[in-house]
Amino acid sequence: MTPFVLHCGNPPLPISLTDVPLTSASEIPTNDECDALLAEAAGSPGPRVIVLGGDASLAAVLTRLMRTDRLDVEVAFVPESATAAAHVYRLGTGSRAAKVAMTGTAAPTPLIRDDAGKAVVGRAVVHGASGRALEGEAYVDDTKLFSGTAHAVEIVPTPNMPGLKARVTGGRRLLPHRWAHGRAMQLGAYAASLTRDGVPGDREVKRSTFYRHHVEWLLVR
Image (cartoon, rainbow, N blue to C red):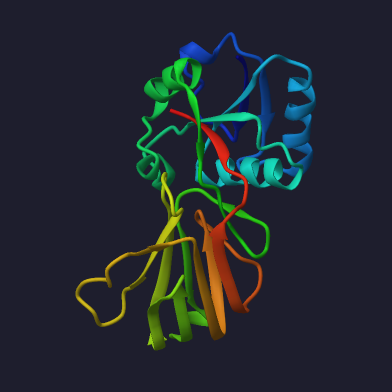
């Protein structure tokens, strides 16, 4: 295993990673920044990318690996503090996560993406556009989440098959709907806004699908 650190933004560098080759990147790495790291790792035996950053940082790296057919590269995640993805995959933070990144074992893990070709690692939310209610319907595989009006739909990856879970949240209900587990969540609406791993989408959509990619990613745990 040959580790390479992608330092996204300005989180503290754990001591155990100080001797590992490091590439600095934006908080949400660009394609060029991801490609620079992959070029440095090219030819190394068993390259392992250690993403030091937040959920959006990890999602950007996985999106690039997926689009460039490089999901054979091992990926470790070192968040500074607890994040949605750290909770999903039961990962530590800071120095504890860094130790796992250096000594852990990579295992195939379901990769969740949407129909725009973007990976989701912690949490995605579909809500009504411009503060309005979400009007339409949504399914997880054959299970109906809602039909009519809802406040929002939350989608979360799972570390095991079938790959994701989703539920209706908020609104007048005191408690959210139960989670529905499946391979895909499909939604049709008059207008909807997406937020992926804390990053708002740049346009409204009428349809959105989140689903398990046909190739898994190699998560170090």
